[in-house]
Length: 491
Image 1: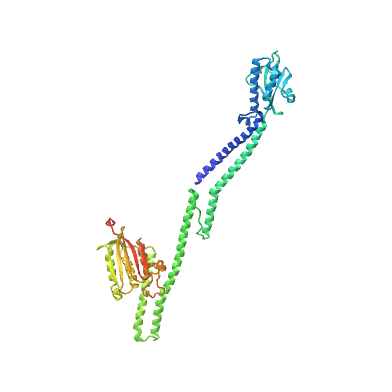
Image 2: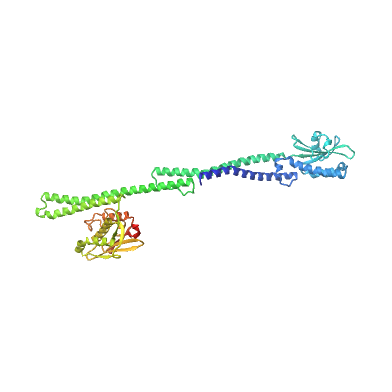
């Protein structure tokens, strides 16, 4: 998730989550406190009663005043009847309320003698202008937590009368609501803070800490330390960049290790291949100088020395050529040429060797001509090395087959011998520099171990492939591909 999206969500959460939870808390706490209103006889879920505790008292008194007005209209002397007043008082007794009726300045009736004695002297005087008013005067006595509603009227004989409804206000409910909501809000804020802290920690701080640990591993050389997959966003992009960097560093390090290993093997192989002919040359020259080899036999050993110097020359030439390919800077002279003709001409160069070993060529070539686009000189070197290799390991009276085929705009050249074959464990190593399948090097005394390495480098420089199929005692077949020449290539 992107940081911008995360910040927007955090901002909305800070505002909306506490608000939603506060509303939920108010509804739940209010519902519980409204249940407590049942002691006043109310059944309607009016949340205003929680905020204004005098509302319940006003509802009680308004109902009673309407009843009193009805009684006075029907019977002006109705309020002088004690049984009527008792009925009225019983209606509100279960709502923590009672009535007081005053005639002139004397107590005429009360539904609660004990409570009336405490408040009677404090009741307001008769006010003629209050008679007939819709809104009745209200008085709140804080010391007694009582709400007094007053209704003035005249008795049947004309004497002044006041009808009071005294109600105990439920201020405790408001106080409880305030305390409970304060606690709820603190809990909500703590919960919201913990939720956001955990969310931000899991989404930002923990991933950054993991990335820091990963970078420390990289600094310590541990390139195997992987980070888990991460979702889209800045953190996910950082993770992917780290993984890309780790893989590049690992690849570079592996290449460096491999290069060092190859260099050690190269030095070892070069040392071996140089030491053998140099030791032979030195030994024969010393023997001729100190007279160990008679003069009449020196020509034989001079030919051996010449043979060994030719091996040294081929070895150094091969190393120089292979180093040129390995630099990845070789320029190819790409041209159109007939691969069939090149195969025929290259095979003819081995005529003398093949005649001596009684080895024959079988050329299975597609068409009279078959044109490819490649570096003719280097491809001729590939064919020469592969045929030379086939001859070295072919027995007398055998056949070497060279075949060309066309498939999917590619030309495939196959060179197959019926020789000793290559052991399975050596198949993957034949492309290595100086590698020879015969550890004693007895089968290939003239070889440098660089021929197949050069072949592979040339084919790969053309962005083509070469493969080998071999069975011990049956023979070996090398197959490489070249791009087929198409007329539109000249366009």
